[in-house]
Image (cartoon, rainbow, N blue to C red; front, side, top):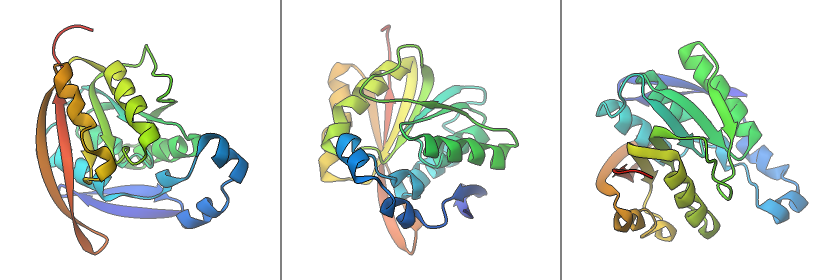
Length: 213
Protein backbone atom coordinates (compact mmCIF):
# COMPACT_ATOMS: atom_id res chain seq x y z
CA UNK A 1 0.00 0.00 0.00
CA UNK A 2 1.11 3.56 -0.72
CA UNK A 3 -0.19 7.04 0.06
CA UNK A 4 -0.95 9.24 -2.94
CA UNK A 5 -1.10 13.02 -2.58
CA UNK A 6 -3.56 14.64 -4.95
CA UNK A 7 -3.69 18.45 -5.35
CA UNK A 8 -7.32 19.57 -5.43
CA UNK A 9 -8.47 23.21 -5.45
CA UNK A 10 -5.50 24.43 -3.44
CA UNK A 11 -5.62 21.52 -1.00
CA UNK A 12 -3.85 18.20 -0.85
CA UNK A 13 -6.01 15.11 -0.46
CA UNK A 14 -4.13 12.04 0.72
CA UNK A 15 -5.28 8.63 -0.44
CA UNK A 16 -4.31 5.13 0.48
CA UNK A 17 -3.90 3.20 -2.77
CA UNK A 18 -2.74 -0.32 -3.60
CA UNK A 19 0.97 -0.09 -4.38
CA UNK A 20 0.55 -2.13 -7.56
CA UNK A 21 -2.96 -2.02 -9.06
CA UNK A 22 -1.77 -4.21 -11.92
CA UNK A 23 -1.02 -6.97 -9.46
CA UNK A 24 -4.65 -6.90 -8.36
CA UNK A 25 -5.71 -7.32 -11.96
CA UNK A 26 -3.41 -10.30 -12.34
CA UNK A 27 -5.12 -11.98 -9.39
CA UNK A 28 -8.65 -11.68 -10.78
CA UNK A 29 -10.34 -15.09 -10.73
CA UNK A 30 -11.32 -15.85 -14.37
CA UNK A 31 -14.44 -17.67 -13.19
CA UNK A 32 -15.56 -14.71 -11.09
CA UNK A 33 -14.85 -12.35 -13.99
CA UNK A 34 -16.88 -14.52 -16.34
CA UNK A 35 -19.82 -14.56 -13.93
CA UNK A 36 -19.87 -10.88 -12.96
CA UNK A 37 -17.08 -9.14 -14.92
CA UNK A 38 -15.51 -7.78 -11.73
CA UNK A 39 -12.22 -6.03 -12.38
CA UNK A 40 -10.25 -3.78 -10.00
CA UNK A 41 -10.68 -0.51 -11.89
CA UNK A 42 -11.37 0.99 -8.46
CA UNK A 43 -7.68 0.71 -7.53
CA UNK A 44 -6.62 3.40 -10.02
CA UNK A 45 -7.06 7.16 -9.81
CA UNK A 46 -8.74 8.41 -12.96
CA UNK A 47 -8.67 11.91 -14.41
CA UNK A 48 -12.46 12.27 -14.21
CA UNK A 49 -12.40 11.78 -10.45
CA UNK A 50 -9.65 14.37 -10.01
CA UNK A 51 -11.56 16.81 -12.24
CA UNK A 52 -14.84 16.35 -10.36
CA UNK A 53 -13.14 16.77 -6.98
CA UNK A 54 -11.53 19.97 -8.26
CA UNK A 55 -14.80 21.26 -9.68
CA UNK A 56 -16.80 20.65 -6.50
CA UNK A 57 -14.36 22.45 -4.22
CA UNK A 58 -13.19 25.20 -6.58
CA UNK A 59 -16.77 26.26 -7.40
CA UNK A 60 -18.21 25.75 -3.90
CA UNK A 61 -20.84 23.32 -5.16
CA UNK A 62 -21.01 21.52 -1.79
CA UNK A 63 -23.33 23.01 0.82
CA UNK A 64 -21.98 22.32 4.32
CA UNK A 65 -24.08 19.69 6.08
CA UNK A 66 -25.66 18.31 2.90
CA UNK A 67 -26.16 14.56 2.62
CA UNK A 68 -24.33 13.02 -0.33
CA UNK A 69 -23.94 9.64 -2.00
CA UNK A 70 -21.02 8.74 -4.24
CA UNK A 71 -21.88 6.06 -6.79
CA UNK A 72 -18.98 3.81 -7.82
CA UNK A 73 -16.66 5.47 -5.35
CA UNK A 74 -13.48 3.51 -6.03
CA UNK A 75 -10.80 4.93 -3.74
CA UNK A 76 -13.21 7.64 -2.60
CA UNK A 77 -11.46 10.75 -3.92
CA UNK A 78 -14.64 12.56 -4.99
CA UNK A 79 -16.57 11.71 -1.84
CA UNK A 80 -13.63 12.72 0.34
CA UNK A 81 -13.42 16.07 -1.48
CA UNK A 82 -17.14 16.58 -0.88
CA UNK A 83 -16.67 15.71 2.79
CA UNK A 84 -13.89 18.28 3.06
CA UNK A 85 -16.43 20.76 1.71
CA UNK A 86 -18.78 19.83 4.55
CA UNK A 87 -20.94 17.06 3.05
CA UNK A 88 -22.04 13.96 4.97
CA UNK A 89 -21.04 11.30 2.47
CA UNK A 90 -22.08 7.70 1.97
CA UNK A 91 -19.57 5.92 -0.28
CA UNK A 92 -21.08 3.17 -2.41
CA UNK A 93 -19.50 0.59 -4.67
CA UNK A 94 -20.02 -2.99 -5.77
CA UNK A 95 -16.56 -4.07 -4.64
CA UNK A 96 -16.00 -4.44 -0.87
CA UNK A 97 -12.27 -3.80 -1.29
CA UNK A 98 -13.00 -0.41 -2.82
CA UNK A 99 -15.24 0.44 0.13
CA UNK A 100 -12.46 -0.46 2.55
CA UNK A 101 -10.15 2.04 0.89
CA UNK A 102 -12.84 4.73 0.66
CA UNK A 103 -13.62 4.34 4.36
CA UNK A 104 -9.93 4.60 5.26
CA UNK A 105 -9.31 7.54 2.92
CA UNK A 106 -12.13 9.51 4.51
CA UNK A 107 -10.48 8.85 7.89
CA UNK A 108 -7.06 9.83 6.57
CA UNK A 109 -8.33 13.28 5.60
CA UNK A 110 -11.12 13.94 8.09
CA UNK A 111 -10.07 11.95 11.14
CA UNK A 112 -13.02 9.55 11.18
CA UNK A 113 -13.98 6.58 9.00
CA UNK A 114 -16.37 7.20 6.15
CA UNK A 115 -19.79 5.59 5.90
CA UNK A 116 -19.84 2.90 3.22
CA UNK A 117 -22.39 0.62 1.60
CA UNK A 118 -22.32 -2.06 -1.07
CA UNK A 119 -24.70 -1.14 -3.88
CA UNK A 120 -25.52 -3.18 -6.97
CA UNK A 121 -26.89 -0.88 -9.68
CA UNK A 122 -28.96 -3.76 -11.02
CA UNK A 123 -30.98 -3.53 -7.80
CA UNK A 124 -31.17 0.17 -6.88
CA UNK A 125 -31.69 0.68 -3.15
CA UNK A 126 -35.11 2.08 -2.38
CA UNK A 127 -34.16 3.58 0.99
CA UNK A 128 -30.82 5.22 0.08
CA UNK A 129 -31.47 8.79 -1.04
CA UNK A 130 -29.63 12.10 -0.85
CA UNK A 131 -29.88 15.65 -2.17
CA UNK A 132 -26.37 15.38 -3.61
CA UNK A 133 -25.22 12.49 -5.82
CA UNK A 134 -21.71 12.17 -7.23
CA UNK A 135 -20.20 9.86 -9.84
CA UNK A 136 -16.95 9.96 -11.80
CA UNK A 137 -15.94 7.83 -14.79
CA UNK A 138 -18.53 5.11 -14.26
CA UNK A 139 -19.86 5.00 -17.85
CA UNK A 140 -17.35 2.78 -19.60
CA UNK A 141 -19.29 -0.39 -20.46
CA UNK A 142 -22.69 -0.79 -22.12
CA UNK A 143 -23.94 -3.06 -19.37
CA UNK A 144 -23.50 -0.26 -16.80
CA UNK A 145 -25.39 2.50 -18.60
CA UNK A 146 -29.04 1.73 -17.88
CA UNK A 147 -28.42 0.35 -14.37
CA UNK A 148 -26.48 3.52 -13.53
CA UNK A 149 -29.30 5.78 -14.71
CA UNK A 150 -31.85 3.73 -12.76
CA UNK A 151 -29.74 4.02 -9.61
CA UNK A 152 -29.23 7.75 -10.05
CA UNK A 153 -32.99 8.21 -10.44
CA UNK A 154 -33.59 6.17 -7.31
CA UNK A 155 -31.00 7.90 -5.13
CA UNK A 156 -31.31 11.58 -6.09
CA UNK A 157 -33.95 13.34 -4.04
CA UNK A 158 -36.40 15.82 -5.59
CA UNK A 159 -34.85 19.26 -5.48
CA UNK A 160 -31.38 17.74 -5.37
CA UNK A 161 -28.41 17.87 -7.69
CA UNK A 162 -26.16 15.25 -9.23
CA UNK A 163 -22.70 15.71 -10.71
CA UNK A 164 -21.56 13.08 -13.21
CA UNK A 165 -18.05 13.39 -14.64
CA UNK A 166 -16.89 11.53 -17.74
CA UNK A 167 -14.00 11.98 -20.18
CA UNK A 168 -16.07 12.00 -23.37
CA UNK A 169 -16.01 8.28 -24.11
CA UNK A 170 -18.09 7.46 -27.16
CA UNK A 171 -19.88 4.74 -25.23
CA UNK A 172 -21.32 7.38 -22.88
CA UNK A 173 -22.69 9.66 -25.60
CA UNK A 174 -26.35 10.44 -25.00
CA UNK A 175 -26.54 8.53 -21.71
CA UNK A 176 -26.80 11.33 -19.16
CA UNK A 177 -28.55 13.53 -21.70
CA UNK A 178 -31.55 11.20 -21.66
CA UNK A 179 -32.45 12.48 -18.22
CA UNK A 180 -33.32 15.88 -19.69
CA UNK A 181 -36.30 14.30 -21.46
CA UNK A 182 -37.53 13.19 -18.04
CA UNK A 183 -37.53 16.70 -16.60
CA UNK A 184 -34.02 16.93 -15.20
CA UNK A 185 -32.22 20.23 -15.77
CA UNK A 186 -28.70 19.77 -17.11
CA UNK A 187 -25.73 22.11 -17.31
CA UNK A 188 -22.52 20.95 -18.93
CA UNK A 189 -19.11 22.06 -17.68
CA UNK A 190 -15.72 21.36 -19.24
CA UNK A 191 -12.97 20.94 -16.65
CA UNK A 192 -9.37 20.78 -17.84
CA UNK A 193 -6.77 19.37 -15.48
CA UNK A 194 -3.20 18.26 -15.62
CA UNK A 195 -2.91 14.66 -14.57
CA UNK A 196 -0.10 12.15 -14.91
CA UNK A 197 1.88 14.35 -17.27
CA UNK A 198 -0.96 15.20 -19.64
CA UNK A 199 -3.85 17.65 -19.93
CA UNK A 200 -7.28 16.04 -19.72
CA UNK A 201 -10.62 17.54 -20.63
CA UNK A 202 -13.45 16.13 -18.52
CA UNK A 203 -17.17 16.79 -18.91
CA UNK A 204 -19.12 17.41 -15.72
CA UNK A 205 -22.88 17.04 -16.10
CA UNK A 206 -24.69 19.04 -13.43
CA UNK A 207 -28.22 17.66 -13.07
CA UNK A 208 -31.06 19.23 -11.15
CA UNK A 209 -34.21 17.39 -10.18
CA UNK A 210 -37.51 19.08 -9.42
CA UNK A 211 -40.90 17.83 -8.31
CA UNK A 212 -41.91 14.70 -6.42
CA UNK A 213 -41.08 11.09 -7.07
